[in-house]
Length: 609
Image 1 (spheres, rainbow, N blue to C red):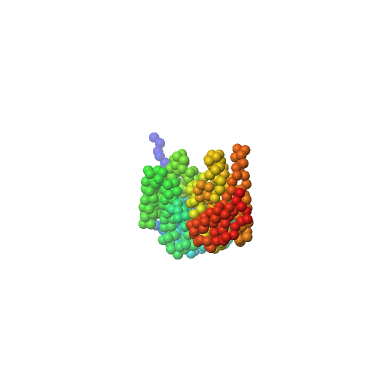
Image 2 (tube, helix red, strand yellow):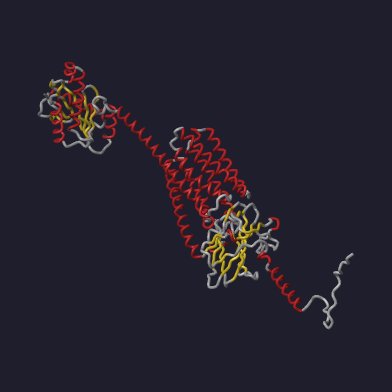
């Protein structure tokens, strides 16, 4: 049987060599001291590097802008143990590397950690930017050097602060970073929002960012200019036409403009910079008002009350839901209000597109316009909501898609309203033309085309009110009855038509010719000529009417007697003038002359034929 060696026994020291008591030699003690120093150093800086750590951003080789998704560490804070004060996360924080897309919201604050490496002879001035304006609370800490010493004071901003708190007075959240000397630095950013957001921070050189903001400012100005122009133009039209559709369009355009200016940060900058409550809640009530007025405009524009009663009730339901959501948002439940607003925007756009499609199939002229406008906005809304929900990652579309869609929608709606007005005006012009034709028919002799008694009365009422002097000529055809009896009614009608034509040849456009019955014609002379010229005109008319009339190769002899009465000398009403001219015409017949004046014994030297 083998004996187990005694593991506790130590071999005896060789003779002459002193035995060392214990394990702590001078070298061992030095090594232990170095380990302790390293441990203390690690513990002092463990809050800057605890957990998973992303690689630092090399500022010397990176071009502006720098997408930071791969360089960020994130940690979601327990809302019950808030560290909203200007202090770092605890050492026990479980950091996660490179979360893409980064979602903020649902009342759970998110901490971001970013490490930066600055080389020699490099500019240390940078801007950390967030592609959103809707963060309620943002706390920026750092930069910290490798020893954990802060290089700048904390910066607090967001919707719960007055606009003056935003660094550099910018609408979007940006935080300046100034690095003094080469080395590795760490910055922290705490974000909190009750509205769900999907963001991707970026790092910019100040010059590059300012250049990019100039382009964005020009783009925003163009979109705002389009909307303001359409708003003012249609406001004038709403007042001119007293149209409910135009008024609702103006309200829709105004609420869309308010929504865009809110999302771009301009409402907080220029409308209510010192009111954090309005800054925060405008993200709820502005889009809510937009949904509300859009539904009312669609109901009026598509005439749903007359064309589709069921759809009209559904749209009214959307209107009441929008009012309820506004109340929910203003009560403080902003996340719920935003979710409900997005659901209404999606479902409402689909619903109205389906209704417009059905109306278009039924032949509604405005439905196709509405379908085109709604399609542009629906596409923009889908893109924005998809980005907020993390389905799509695109800072450019997040910043610009909605206002592109809104501008396009408002332009299409303006064109639709113009087409509607043109259609209404065309219908009105057709009705006016028909009314004119009916009025003309009621005041026109159907055989000769000149005025009848009604036409004469209307013309005389207008003419006798004019300041200039005028005259009335009464013409009676002398041989008309014989022609009518010998050759028939066709010849008699030809004689009447030819008489009217010959009279029109010798008269001015301002003069009125009327056939008042049988073979009697009346002429109203506007702006009566002097007596000599009047006699000359009467002579030409008499001579024209005595020319032979040819009917079926037969020359028919015809003549006329004319009585002339002057206004106001011979009468101040059409009836008085007709009686005076009638007496003068009978004297001309009796005397066998061509014409007589009511107020003079002068007569033409031309005898009647």
